[in-house]
Length: 505
Image 1 (cartoon, rainbow, N blue to C red):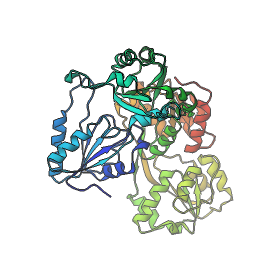
Image 2 (image 1 turned 180 degrees about the vertical axis):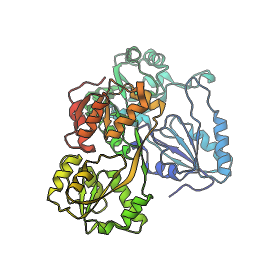
Image 3 (image 1 turned 90 degrees about the horizontal axis):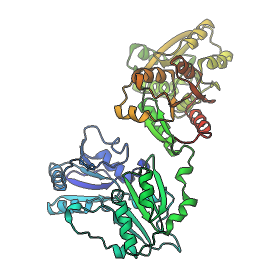
Image 4 (image 1 turned 90 degrees about the vertical axis):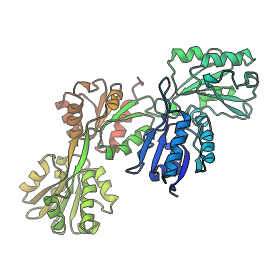
């Protein structure tokens, strides 16, 4: 069900991990006309917004000017009255320290229809990611969510510290870092045991999450020593002791490692998601972008004559994707390749073909042109028409070898790789990376050229295969390790093997 015009949706985006966003939140983001969003929403949360949607930042940044709450409400009302479908995207849950209730009442008073889409709140999610169950049989049958930072302008506190000190369960303080020492002293002053376990969870569910455990009496000192900063929440109670057994996040094999992904943005999301799932903090620093050339005369001519080729060679998943786009544009599908021997340069390319209903006839074990040439030795090419569909800047080893064997070779450039200019904040984040993954020689050349002196020389280079490794050495970049299988899965395996013997920075 898409967003409806004239309606405001108060949407919780969850605590920070994009994977914890609800299906309904993503659906509304994709169909909204206007999105008013906070600062602490998950990375990539707005990537699914439709083209032409208005994105309005209304977040509150500590120690910086921010839009007053009344102004936010006014703009929500104006946008809805203009006939827009409006999403008010908030970190966590809109009704838990999110002021969603206030915004809902403003909309109600103005006669504006609204809906509430709950989100997972940090008090449940960040604690779970830290291995701390907020309730546990015999330790805590209740949990209290408490603001750790009240509005300083209201004067007197609304918190009953005596009641909180005597609360028979777990206390979870939101926004509690700035007043951590004062809040812990207040609990102790009202009778809470200073030796009780407590924890601070920084950047809960997000990359770089850290958890510090101490006693109630020493937590503030330990957190300051460890440099804990907002956003963070504080947990007080017996349940903290279970973290020792339940701290699953830190056990992921790439936890604490910062890894740069240099693939083109259109292809990087799968690799980035895999690495994040293994615990890594991923910096997407695409060195290249793919520009299609399927409307060129050479591609159009090749597609028109596709049924004449006896051998079709594809050298990358990008080539597969664009070949099929060109076929579709001509009203054709996989059946157009029925009469040809189809060769894929490696397992990644073969998998891309399989997704489109084509089982590659020839797939070498090594992801290099030389290996494909060897694998094609049993295929008759003398006097036969051969199509090599590839990138514009690829090596000529394959077409030259097949031409020498008498093949009538047509080399068609389906795309070219163009240097991508990385965002300054991503370049800065890459400076402290542990690893940089390279998936082609073009990612090496273009990243080195784009970054110049800002290239993160201390990061270890992980190469997808020998051609990429040669490009790295030519660029003066040491190769830490090379994938044994020359595809993305092999790259991940190499990274895991390499990271297994190293400690996080």
